Amino acid sequence: MARVRRRGFTLIELLVVIAIIAILISLLLPAVQQAREAARRAQCKNNLKQIGLALHNYHDAHSAFPAGYYSWGTSNGSAPAWAHMDPQTWDAAPGWGWSMMLLPFIDQAPIYNRMDIDASCFHAANADLVRTKLSVFLCPTASGPDGEFTVQDASGNPLDIAGRQVVFGRSHYVASHGQESCWGECGASTSGEVFTDIYTGTTRTVAINGDASQVADGPFFRNSRTRFRDVTDGTSNSIFIGEHSSRLSDKTWVGVVPGAFTHPRFTTPENGPDAAATLTLVHAGPSGGELDITGFPIIHPVNFPTLHVGQMYSEHTGGGHIGMGDGSVRFISENIDLITFAELSSIGEGEVIGEF
Figure 1 (cartoon, rainbow, N blue to C red):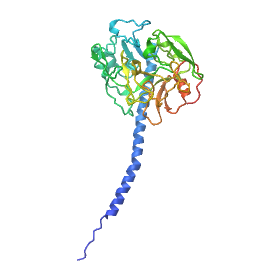
Figure 2 (figure 1 turned 45 degrees about the vertical axis):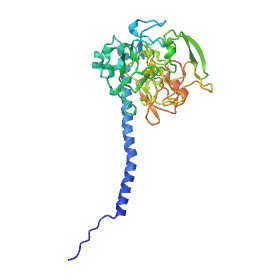
Figure 3 (figure 1 turned 180 degrees about the horizontal axis):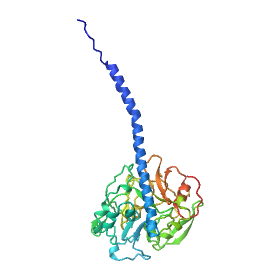
Figure 4 (figure 1 turned 90 degrees about the horizontal axis):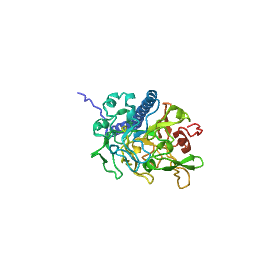
């Protein structure tokens, strides 16, 4: 009987097939990763669109946008004991932030209705609710934590206020204070320096006495009540909200706690901890007459390498999303011209903004 020869793969042929498969997989993986990032980026953009729409609906209901955060009003640093006023910043209860005030307008009315708004955001009565994880405030690209976090003091230890630690739900989105910042010692100062011309670096001294509006030139600040008519630069030319990944520092949708500090997760020669207002707010610079070593005003757009806890920061490739005052969402390159970004960050300075 004739023998039937069975043909199989030789070792060389098998190795060639494996090599081809490996090459195909290596070509396919980047495409899969890009597709996934495109989906994450689209979700992040959609989150900001929802928040922008909520801001407009809030304005329709209250004839103004929510404050950056609410604090006991004072011009001399005095407040009742229950307000726990920080003597260094004059931040105090109730502390509720801009994004918490939007809850009824982003399908989170049940949470809002259960909160004791008359108590502070750090009061025990609200302790469970303020830890809630809300997906609308989370960017899926952010590689840092997305769960609750413990608010820290200046040394980086858990902040103890009213005999208990404060734990808040996280947010990857922040509101714009404008070019200038007024937190930390500025919030408690009798006077301060602000820029009058970002092109020449000229400044002037203004009276503050606890009123952040004397410094802030953006839409959100302590006890702000910005209206559409205040945005004289045009809502399509004014940044209202943007990204800040938890890879850099902790932000929250809840509010501001007196005595709190925001700490960077990694350090640069230019960054460090900053005051409680940066739990919800950022600014673009220039601020307070600050100049770099060349004498130029310090400006930090999205992903600027200073990596301040008080600037916008995104992990999307090449830049990050910002929400404009008209409700639109734009993707801003991290290589945007510094002056252009500063122009976009103020709402009434009268700067002429070109293409960006």
